[in-house]
Length: 318
Image (cartoon, rainbow, N blue to C red; front, side):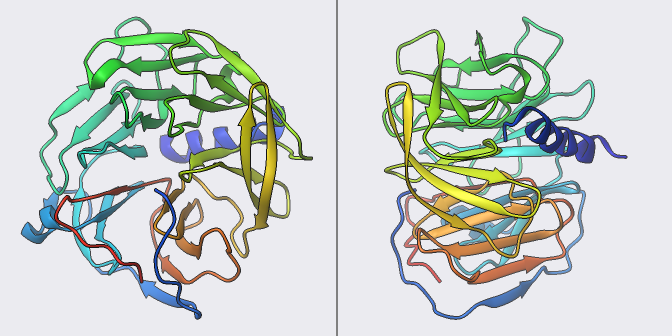
């Protein structure tokens, strides 16, 4: 079993065992369509010159990070990153890739539409560091990294090279993280809970969710609410919640059909973009959901996703 699949399986297993697991606008098409993956050479970095001026969708797979123009979904590049896993981006369009390869665990930074690495983030205070997901606070440019194998979240202030490690009370189950629009950081936690690191605080606190969730597998921010994915044995459900102090109230939810295991999703301009461990990338209208509007098939264990916006782009949706 390859290390990437092991870590993904470990994350889902931990979720099942412990009970833990963009602002939308744009035109909405009425019918689903299928987009087949182009036959490109994997394993080496390459980039079309036009990518620098496009809004880009990055998808991490076992063979590398695949890059598509958005919303046309034309393959425009690839980052030949061995064992790339989670993805996130900042307001300047820089993209961060969490790498889980044994002995090389780190977060790599790439410029928008660029194939040359510009920074590496690795805390030097611990030997136990397998970064699973990341998120950038748009207000401060703090880079948060959740590690699947320890009870710490690492904060690289202003995307600097020195990390502050903060103990996450959720323990090993807190492998997914996201900032909201106010600079508060959330991770998944044991049971139907979240852990919150409030802006300016150095301590995580528990947030209880008022819904019969099995747990929170992965999470994101849609511009108004937290979006949580709950994976149960026979279904995957997306919940939208609003946090009030130590409690979170569910404002809406949707069952995601036909997928089984949604990983690190992205919400952007009326789309819910969801990698599934079983070789598909599915697009739904958000927040209405219903039938998928597009599907990319044949990906090699897709795990992470992020949108990188070029300042000159004009993205209008499908």
